[in-house]
Image (cartoon, rainbow over all chains, first blue to last red; front, side, top):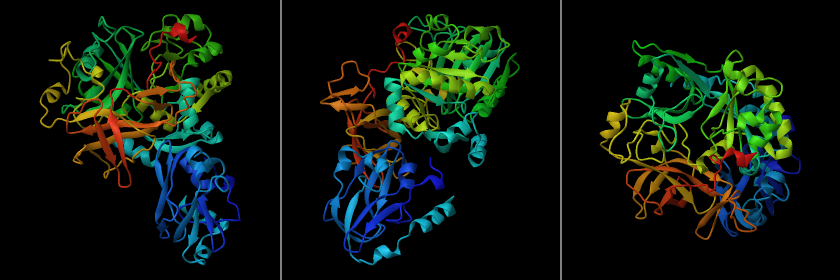
Length: 134
Length: 430
């Protein structure tokens, strides 16, 4: 497993306590799981996605990631409506491990409150949070 | 149980601990030891490697107990479920030096303390391999029941190193690095062993690596596939591990962690101690070969601890293997239940994993290793495991498994991963 220093945590996204990342401005955001999460989960073999049009609150579970060993929930970083789901993940769930911030994106959301994304963590804050969990 | 609980807070390390960290293993505590769950190649690749090439596992967390003396056989016959006088082959001959037998240790209630493999090293000398953290408890159990008999029991926990090589290429890999592979593999049947881990023993010359390292090489394992368990001095573990890795490169050898170990053994319908077998009567399960039943199953062929309880069960429970219709699993836990077709709760889920190497084609299950698999067969895997229910079920019955989040339909089966290779004649594997 990766040490904290080895984790790839880019600056063009923001982070949640439950290890999702969010990219975008207030109008439309893209969501996935970060390098720490994919490293901890191991091989993702199945992704359960919501339907386009579904509406969730921030923190609510919107899907699951199935690894060889276990099933993990993925949670909404902001409240809003699902506008797109990454259909490539049906045939290639491993994209979540291989390209967590690009081809392994999971959903796109139209946030209820365009400013809610500003409450999320940047990479330095997220690393501090991980250190605190150790 | 106290040994294991203490060790969970201060986990022990195997000789390969630092090697695992250096090679990016994702670690977790199991049985009181910090062990690799998987390596960067991932648990799916590790599972598939054992089916198509070979996988190597650090198993030094397991415990070895020696039972020696004229009273050893009597003690084992009383405490171990397998009848060691009738455990070899269809002719039911006794355990002899070089042969191994699988069984369980039961308490007076017929509950499983642990499962184990017993090997006869020499007349009056037996080696028992139990699970991680169980050496102390099982050794004490044997001592408590040895009475005045002439028997010595030695708990060798952390004193013996162990690694497993499993998969169709495992003998070919070992042939590259053993001193006399033809002699070692000659007539080596499943559940037999040669050599010894103690260099001072005359048995040690039977199996040595090219550099002289003595090992006990046993045709046993926990994957259901052709392979070996290697017992050796802990000081030699890292060196032999690296020698085997180098030799295995050309044969598709992957190092494997506990995640792949778990999915492989489940697909092979092998129980995990303290999960699939445990504090309930050891009866009505897929492992009746561990009990000394007579031919028509009306009685047992010997007296042993726990026998009376097994014959007097008030509330029957049944443990069955199951197979899902896709790879999705349920989580284990108090809120996970098994329901029948009417929605009535009938039991619990003991194990639920994904066997990544199998898939359904119509009604038939194939594995990636099936010789008759259809062209282009590229399975996504199927969920599988064991349920324990309060009702008798038959093969083909469907039940539902529900955890707090998900419901999956599964079918009761008598076998999971097809075309397993553990028992293949060794001459075909060289």
